[in-house]
Structures are given as C-alpha cells and as structure tokens.
Length: 313
Image (cartoon, rainbow, N blue to C red; front, side, top):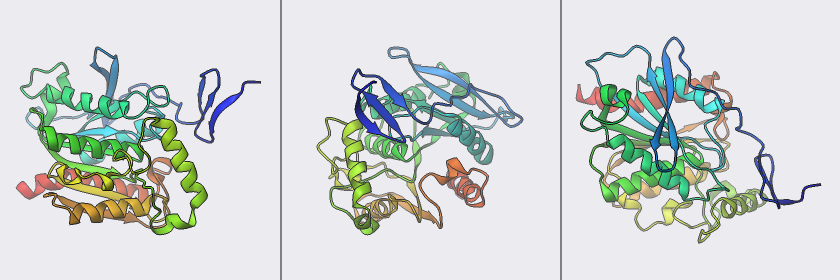
C-alpha cells in the first residue's frame, strides 16, 4: 500500500513517492460554442507553455469594444479550470456581455504559491500586449476594451486577484487600465481568530496546515499573500472600484468583511463595496448555479462590471 505524505481529503492527497492525487476539480471540458458564447484556448507564455481560456459573446458588434475580465479560478491553489468554471464563465460572459480571459496557472503543490500569482501577472501583461490592436490574439485585438479591464477571482483566486490589483497599483504596466477588482468569497486568513472563527478552532487548524502545504516558504498566516490586511502596502492597491462578495455561512465571511473595513479605513483612494448573500456557504454559486441566490449574484457581478459604462453614458 502506498504511504501518504499529506492527506487533505476531500481535496487532495500526496504520497511519499511524490504522486499527487486530486480528489475534485478533474472534470475538464474542452472549449465550446453554444448559442450565445464561444471559447478557445490560447498560449499566453510560450516560454512556459501556460495557457488561458478565452470566452466571448458569439454575436459581437465589430464597432463596439467590450469590457475585459481577467478571471482567476479558485480551488485552494491546487485545481484547474474544471467543468464547473467553464460553465460559470459561459453564464457570466452572456450575462455581462464581456470578453473573459480565464488563466490556467500552474498549481500547487507541484508549483507552490506564489507561482500562481506570477503566472496570473504574466497573463495580465500578455493582455496588455494587445493595446495597439497588434497583439497575438484576434479576439482581444478586435473586441476587448483595454481601458475597461476587470480582475476577478473566487476563493484562492480572489487572493490572486487582490495581489494583481496591488502589483498593478505599484507598477502601472502600460497597455491596460484596471477599472475594477471583484473578490468572490476571498480565501483570506490571519494568525489571530476573528468573528465566528473562534468557534471553529479545528477548522482553523486545517486551514493553516493547508496554507503551509501550498506555500512552504510562507512566513505564516499573516503572510500578506494570505492576510492582505497585514500588508503595510494595502493602500497601494490600484485606486479603482472593488467589489467584495461574502456569504453568511462561510468560514471566511468575517475575513471578507474585515478586508472591506480595513480597505475603507486606509489611505487607499478607491471605492469598495460589499454584498453578503444570506443563507449560503463558500462558492455556493459554483455548485448550485441555477439557484435563486446564484442567479442574483451573477447579475450583481454583471451590473458591477457594466456600472461604470452606464455612469459615463
């Protein structure tokens, strides 16, 4: 019998011979085309072979540029673009009428955090290479408005989305204008329990062990990659619109609220909003996409992306 080195069921197991067994998120769908949305895979980093899945409305006005969403999927930093994400982004692209780049970053534990952060930043710079309409991807050249770029992610992907907004605020790469950041049920943490976390010490222990598993070089649970509120550079986040989404039953709910409050109190010059879905748990919208609350959240995110356009009209 193979001996286990790490057992984080029901998510992932690693054996002493190095074999990694992922227990979810392995149902990968190919790119597709339905009545409203089409998708395709493109390589954005020839050096590493990294790819992204592009989604676009099937019917596009050649005279209209659409907002571009760079989406970072969740999955504890360990999973890929599963069928769940493919279907969710199809629905979001249709609802919001946007172009989406879904980043297929390298995954832990084979590629520990922060490699996924760096891969996602490389994807954003690849998007920026289309600024003059001469980039390698026709969909971005022809249909993406690089003055209206949004960065979004759920769970661990929200961590990455925050990091990208922070790095963008510090480096300001030419070619894209980040108009907004969307953090869906962010996977934030900290060394000291807050709110309802005090009633879940066993779950806290699991979260902290898992963080060290995906990021062995971490300084701990107050590492800014895991606890952005502890980052003295928090106010360097790009001065744009930020939407934080939390749910009532989520273990990470209080961290989302804490992030929202601390961002507002800081010297950051953007505008932050928060919405809480009652009666739901972490990333419920991915598991029950046709539920009333999931549909409502989809519409709220679509409205957030298009709100700035409406304000300018």
